[in-house]
Length: 157
Image (spheres, rainbow, N blue to C red):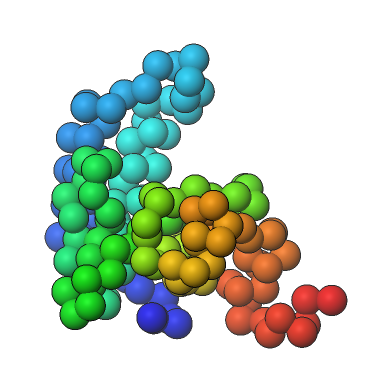
């Protein structure tokens, strides 16, 4: 798994933007359920799809087209079912993933000073971890920050 920033290509950005706009038309949520503006909803979908595309390229995984029924990606070498979660900041300790995921990867998204869309792997979580925690990722704000800063766990005290 990459330990350095992954940078999206222009083509990947175009594909993710197209996917986000198409999917948004299909699953627009009732404003009483999702209080984000339509623009925010599309932007969040875009970041998620772009993270999937970039991570799949970097790991030679097969990305599944976004429609909610399949896992985000599959590893063609061993058939693992992979979920990709993208966040631009920490905001909750619990992040749900699809049941039966073999691997979940949490990515940090940011646009760098050159205007490039970049992703950094915060942490990956295997099937045992996910299943034993009810198919959720648990990550504290302190741990999130330490991972992004490359600190060791013993340095968190």
